[in-house]
Structure formats: structure tokens, C-alpha cells
Amino acid sequence: MHGPIARMILSQGKEYQLRNASGGGGRNTPSYSDDGTITGVLESRGMPQTATDSSGTEVETDLEIRAVPEEATLRPAGSADGYPTLLKHPTGAEYRLLDKYLEDAGVTVLTVMED
Image (cartoon, rainbow, N blue to C red; front, top):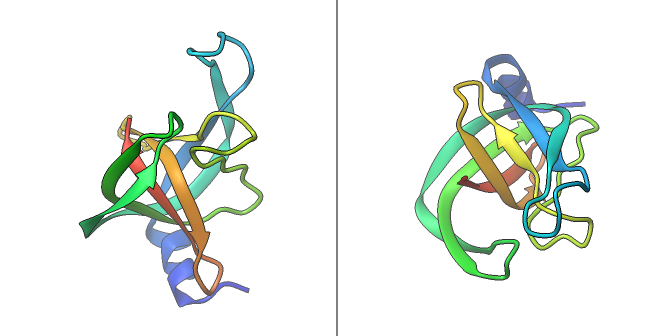
């Protein structure tokens, strides 16, 4: 059961296309394929937080997507499962997933940086 924040995200959020690395393209240039969608709201925290990107470099970002990812495969940077998930906004902007954590009431917070 979703709480009020999750219901608000589902009713007013944008649909992001998820793209996960699919194996081709070689080590430094993975090929990505569509892997479902999530509904989320992009927010700027106002204060940057530090996260580690897939190359192990510390980066600062203040962007988060609050989402309700029903059955979605989300790979944060540094995951042993491969390259991080790309999230494509309806306007065409792309964001790379750095980290994720669960909030209460069915909401997942995705720390992202513009790609």
C-alpha cells in the first residue's frame, strides 16, 4: 500500500525511461537498451551531497528523483551488476543513477547527476 507521497508522485510525476547496459559495445562504451519506466519527481536538494560514480570518482550532486519503482531494475554506480542505470526525462534530459535508498511509504529516492 502506498502512502500519500507515493500517491502524489504517481499522479503528478513524470515518466522516466530506464536504460540499462545490455552487454555490447565493449568495456568503455556499453550499449544501453530500454528497460521499463518509473514515475518520479525531480528535485534539487539545495545542498550537494557526495556520491561515487562508476569510475570510483567522488562527485557532488544535489539532484534527486523521488520515485515509485514498481518492479524496475535500478543499478546504482559502483554496482557489481554492471554500468549504472540511465534515466531519460520526457524532455530528453538524461540522468545517471549514483545511489538509491528507500524512504517510507513506498518511495525510493534516487541520487542522480545529469549525464
